[in-house]
Image 1 (cartoon, rainbow, N blue to C red):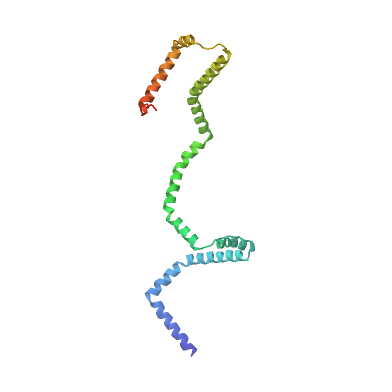
Image 2 (tube, rainbow, N blue to C red):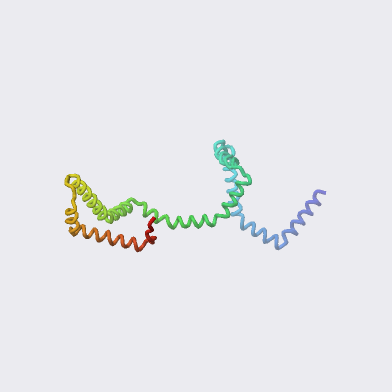
Length: 195
């Protein structure tokens, strides 16, 4: 009985092997045997690494720690909605990052010490004349104050008339007069009403 079953199986296999599709599949399989061998070797190496890692308690702890931290994050409705909102805004965030990438070289140039020093020196050159004029004006005011404190005489009408003839006073009075005329033109005013 055993030999009849074995003979039937042999006949079945011979019939299968005579099928052209099976022959093509076997030919392809034989051609791919080196690649299959490499895959099996890599699989064995991977299993060896996984087995080593699975038995190493330090590695298990290093893997488990981040997973436990992730599990602490509450996946509630608010967090999921916030995450979805963030995902929706990713295109805008990407645009902002691109803009930052474009601006970064400019910021790097601005923040270099040599460039800051150059800008400070240029500003100093521009501001120096104004600073000198202000300092001159301050020294004139201090000197005038000191002179006025030293004078003990009263100023009379004839002194005022003499001062009014001074060209500097005349220029100042003309300036004040012109300035007051401009103010009168620029600001609307109501006619003076007696009470």
